Amino acid sequence: MLEANRISKVVVIVFSVLVSQSLYGQGVQLHTDQAMDGYTLYESGNTAVLIDNCGHLLHEWNDVAAQYHPKLMPNGNIIYIESFSRDIVEKDWNDNTINKLSINSSNIFLDYEVIIMPNGNYLCLARKNFSQSQFESLGYNYGSTQGDGIGNPSQVDMVVEVDRNTGNIVWQWNVADHVIQERDPSKGNFGVVVDHPELLNMDAIATYDWTFQESFMINGFDYNAELDQIVLSIRKMSEIAIIDHSTTTAEAAGHSGGNSGKGGDILYRWGNPQNYGQGDGTERELYFQHNPNWIKYGSLKGNIIMYNNGLNRPGTNYSAVPIINTEVDVNGGYTIQGNGIYSPEEPSLEYSPGPSGLGYYGFYSGYTSAAKILANGNVLVTVGGDDEIFEMTPDGSVVWIYGLYQSDLTFRVEKYALDYPAFDGRDLTAGDLLEFPPSTISCTLVDVEDAYFDNSHAWIADSQVNLTTDISGYLTFKMYSLDGQLLIDTKFLGDYSIDISDFSEGIYFINIKTEQSNKSITFKVSK
Image: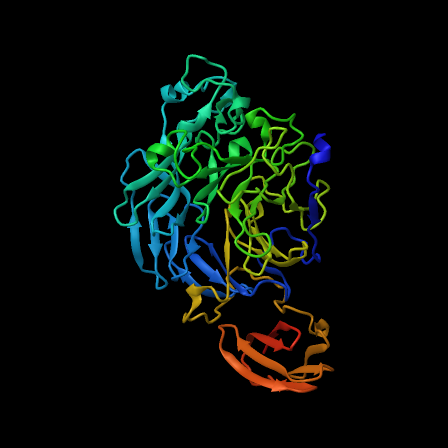
């Protein structure tokens, strides 16, 4: 019966042309015309840098010691959690610190990342110091095999909303308020796990991963303003969970209230049904995942994408990027199937090299890492363990690879389309290649002998851009510099040539528009 109800999963085998023998190549390793035109933000040596698709430095912010990674806001500011102080730091485009905010709590410290709420407040992951007696009151068996001799938790996971002006915590959710155990009936959270999927089982915490002292290790999150809900990555349970943000703090600590009527209890969970007493383990999908986030673009909008690290996966370790449809209803509710498991039983779409390691390196990373859908529908993947980024089309074709010179710990990078509001009116003149030594691979986006646009063909020869077409009617031709300056804007019939001998060295964009299509190529002028 179970098999009859399983959703047919589409597994996309990721593939690309082999462009480098080194897994750790620096700078651009692959670049095609299908990569999204945009700019990538990441931290490099305590400096936040913005690069183009060829790896040229466009802009930088100094003295950025981000806990994990900075984000670029639509107004051009960057925001991050500072590594040492755990303050929320916001810098403007000109590298001025406009806000450095410490939360007004001596027992809670921020971690991982920060999200700007629609009301301007900061939403953050956090931890709170928790004593042995407090953990034991929740049924945790201190000194047992739960810690596997490595150590025991000393902190409990939280989500907090912080007033951007005062630093006051105006809303909070604490995982300790929503746990259950069925071993010690003398504790207040005693119950039957299978009867309470809305609670997290204290005994389901991984017994071999106490490198970090958080109780459950919530290592990533995202906020959905339409639903007023938060999705959490609970690493030590190999599971994601969704909670209600529409509650008051008092309701978030209880089991009623908010839009869901369930307070701070779990609304939805996915990845490892045995955590709530369901299945036999064959239904498990996640292995120490990172970065769940709601897709904001295209036909998959509203689905959730994440990076499934694949650590300790039975058989062979390999990572994957699953996409799931949570089937949320108009009221923000979720349904448990007749078998007791939240749908879907499998991802509806998954990017994976498979256990054989086929495809792009296998893109395996047992820790950190991230995945998200870009504005053009492409998938951006951060392979944290290899300090590499790659971008692929929806069909799994890898179209951009960039190697970072880091310290074997790239949590996540962000990529923004050219029309992202932060870039309006900014000087984005391309500077030097950032990574050193730079890649020896050419950043020419296309093999110009194969640059076809419907019935048009473009190539470069003898200091000229040449176009030929058998399309009847006018074609609109535009050429841009890398910083977005329009250099040529014209229409032509038939064949067309442009002398580029006087062009300075650099990257240029060509856009050709017909009644049937709107296509672009990019070429590099070398002197």
